[in-house]
Length: 128
Length: 420
Image (tube, rainbow over all chains, first blue to last red; front, side, top):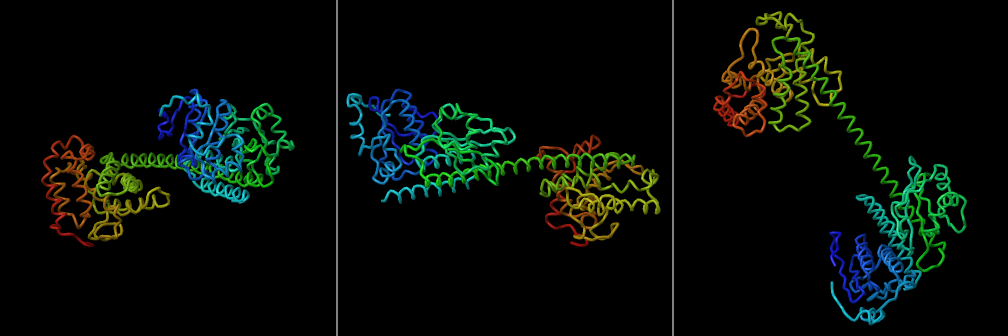
């Protein structure tokens, strides 16, 4: 899963047709657009469910929210499931307050996120 | 945390980040994209765009957009009249309310905006002029925009407007600076051409010293460069060399072209030329410093026995000392009506004999170094050797003389004349 932009690749893991993308600390600056690009790339290559993991993300600011809105749009356009996992309580409150949770499911961790997606789809796993 | 407090903190952080982003003028496109993310993310607005208004083209070009699909590349016609209306309208125009000014603009582009589901239009106005617009779609929550939301949108949009305006001003300043530089370069080129024409005119008057002024200019340039002068100062000294004899234009032609050595009266007439040159050059605004003084003082001597003012040592400007040596070198290495050009050995013997009394030691030393570098091939160009011409075909033979002269000057062995 090479990133062709020359930027540091976004960490992603494919399990069946679900992709887990790690938001890391990219999200709160312009470089976070690479997460959106990676999500779009995964969706275009047939991914049916996206899990964005916030396990390494302490805080989400307005730029992060805007980028996530782009991911929400892309998922909806592709009829793909979108789940945010490992979201801390402060960020979860923010997502709730801003209405993102109307479009996204929150899961406490990756396992719960994958269980929200059709289990049969995730029978075979591969890392990238 | 209470929702309202959290909302305020989130918005305040966006405003703070936006202020910092606008102040960072490094990359305009990046600033716009970041600012627009901050605006959308502050209220989780699903789609929107920032359009920059170009009055000359009568066009609104989308410079940042999200969620608008193919529309993101749009450039919409916007007449000056509509732009004025938008500039004078209220700060946020709700399309639901079909505000009159917005309606007129939006009617023109109804198909476009219906497709992209835009709800709000915020004119970006700086000093009563429309800079651009912000177009915004619905919030992720699906809720209507509250008055508080609209205030946040206005505050953030104003920052974006100021950012675009500042960028434009900067572009204008840069454009004007480039234009001024081009004009200045053009004027300098014209000035140099004029100076060269003058140098040619001076040299034509004296049939025995054709090309003298140009050569003195070039020798002066070489010496100054060797002495580590700045590029600008080197250009200036070359000009001074070209013009150093301009005062000869007022000297009687019969004196200038006399085939014999000058008698007392002819010498007196001839010695008028440095001061006359100064009078000619002084009223002109030269782009380089001290050109008239270099013409006036190129016959001064360190020991005070020169003319027209009998200056001594450091009273003589450094540039004039360079032109003096260049002038003497060319005089000695070209045929005159009363004598043939001197062998280089005699020229450098003259330098040795007159350093400290007529010539500045540092200038002589620099000249010798430059010459030696050409002979030894350590300098790429052979400008001095070329200027000397084919009549000096064994320049290598003076290397020992030059080395000795440099060594004596550096070691302080030579007696240094008056003023030092």
